[in-house]
Amino acid sequence: MWQWFYKLGSPRHFYEMTTGFVPWLARATFLLLAIGLVWGLGFAPPDYQMGDNYRIIYIHVPTASGAIWIYAMMAVMAAMHMIWNIKVADMVAKSCALIGASFCAVALVSGAFWGKPTWGTYWIWDAKLTATLILFFVYVGVMALRSAFDSETAASKAASVLTLVGVVNLPIIYYAAYWWNTLHQRSSELGVRDASANPPEIWIPAVFSGFGLIGLIFVIIILHTRNEILLRERRAQWVQELVKQETDNA
Amino acid sequence: MPEFRFDSIADFFAMGGYGFYVWVSYGFFAVVMGFNLWLPYRQRANTLRLLQARQLRQHGQAGIESDMRQQQDAQQQQGEAH
Image 1 (tube, each protein chain N blue to C red):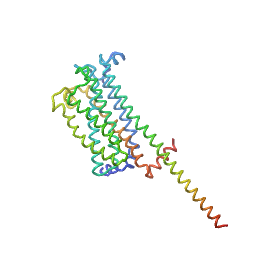
Image 2: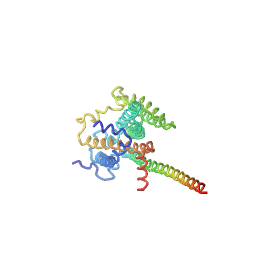
Image 3: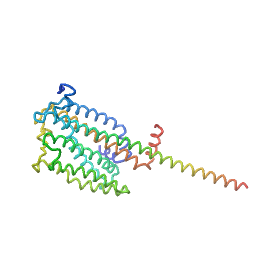
Image 4: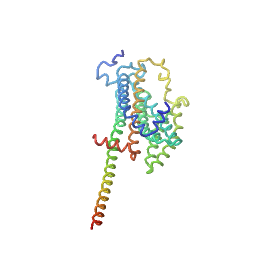
């Protein structure tokens, strides 16, 4: 078990282990997403207060919590890179930034288009919304900082430090609705945590779309990391052989 | 078994009057996720092309060097012969 994790730290093993795994993960992801979203859009019962508008929940909640968890993963990878100097950890951290920013953007936009008909406004400087907007800017900042250096080592170090500093924002987003009484409702009131608040016909499709989006996060991060491995390990024998094979096949 | 909650496809797109908000959200979601999936595939093609070009360049170089060595050897042998 530990050996398996240990092996993932080697770029070559990461690449070889994910080659066969990614297509299956992608298939499972699309199946889960298709079931979750079609069910949520067409087959779940309408909400007694918000009508069909609440169907935005099936993308809003998973992308919003995904944006937080992707950041947490990026921070763990940044720490692993800084403490043990694991190359793959830095590559995964780099791959987390764009998908994290994307999840954040979808959460903000879907939230805005949910807020307009229910709260009467697309945007308000509510604690949870503001902290999520800051998370988006931190993601963009990490990407910009990494691309500002010519030296890869300096870029990784700077991005890792900024990533770790940004962690302070995560509990703020997570607990914003509990610490301050502003507009955004607490998640328990939506029945995400407490299943008894909502009937299973409403939360089961959310479980499908939630796991589908978790799969999508890993598919995209793995695909990015594999590209990064090829690029950074380009001098290794196995990459040179692989490139030769790929171009012969093409 | 869950039943379809709308009377018609038009009804489905209308989303009980919230169609604009629901479909803009889902549309934005689809576009952003589609981009995120497309990007690594394009990057992979670009990376492989880049590494292939690099490999060709190196092999070309090595090829030229070995040609030069052979020429020098041949000239030396000629010199010794004369």
